[in-house]
Image (cartoon, rainbow, N blue to C red; front, side):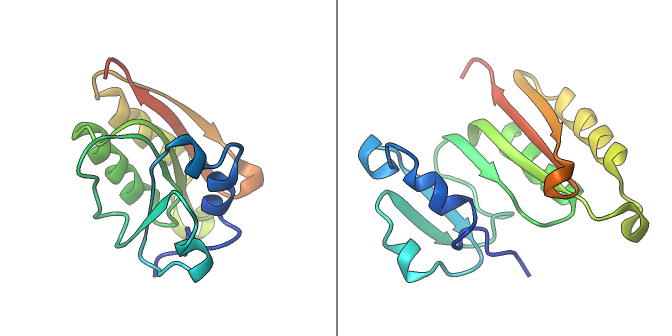
Length: 149
C-alpha cells in the first residue's frame, strides 16, 4: 500500500494554488502516485499526473525541485533520494524520511540521521540540511541542492 500523497488535504493542492498558481508561472508540475487522482485534482491547471510507484519513476530530464513525502521505511526512501542525486534527476530537493516508533521497529532518529549523513556526505556537490519534525510525527526532513548544475 502506498499513501495517497496527491489526494486532497495533502501537499499538491496547496502547492499548486500558492500565489501565483503554477498555471500562471509557466511551472510544470508532475505528481507521481500509485493512487489514481481525484477528478478535481486531475483537472487542476499546470499539473500532470503519473500513476506509478514513486520509488520506480524517474523524470526524462532533470527537474528543478523534487518533493518526496512517501510513507515507507526511511532506508528505502533514503536509497531513492541517493539514486535521484547520483543520477542527476533533480537540482533541489525536500525529502521527508518517516520512521515508526522505536519500540515497534527498532529504528530511531539517530539511526536514520546516521544513515543520511553516511550516504549524502559521499555525494560530490550535494549540500543538504536535516530537520527533525517531531510535531508532525516521527519524521526527518532533508533539504538540499546540487551545487554547480
